Amino acid sequence: MIEYDGTDFYGWQVQPGKRTVQGEIEKALSIIFGERIKVRGSGRTDTGVHALGQVANSFVPPKLSPERLKRALNGTLPRDVYIKEVTPVPPDFDARFSAISRIYLYRILRGRSPLKRRYTLELDYEVDVERMREIARILPGRRNFKYLAMKDEGECDLKRVEIKEKGEEIHVEVEANRFLRRMVRGIVGLLLQGGRGKILPEDVERILKGEKRKPPFAPARGLYLVRVVYPTP
Image: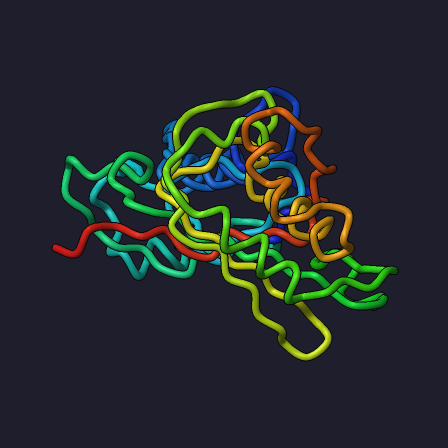
């Protein structure tokens, strides 16, 4: 399990000439084992998106115990990536395709904070949380969410969209079997416009069908991959 601060990364996936989380982990493994080793993540996170519980798998030489490998990785990786757990898995395990759902969190801050500005969306306007919840209740279901995504499409089973107030923050937690590119940020953008009264509940189906223009995406900095769920053995 991997935690990272996505602020200074061009996302998870390796890209030529770009600093990515996958690239840093593969580089660390190559240093430790003296050979090129690739890792496969549970899914891509975009530029600026953080993770509390990203999962990746890899075939590595059986030279180190899981605990020693964890220590070696954390001693080699930069400070904005941390390996929380190393666990042996069956040969047929695939971090992406074995997963049954992913859980994301989006943090919204009422007001400003120099200490939280890289990790939350700072709001300079008021939102009605109950209106946001009214919109959120409409969204779950199995459908193509391409009109809340970016250059991507496909059917997703959106299991839940929950909104909680945590002091000065509003937390939006979203769970689905899979997500399209920027889909969570599209959902949060929709909820925020609903909270401002600019989108009404009766507008939601029209937006999901592409009959009404979608709202702007929420910025990446407030988004976290919290957990990847796998079948219980």
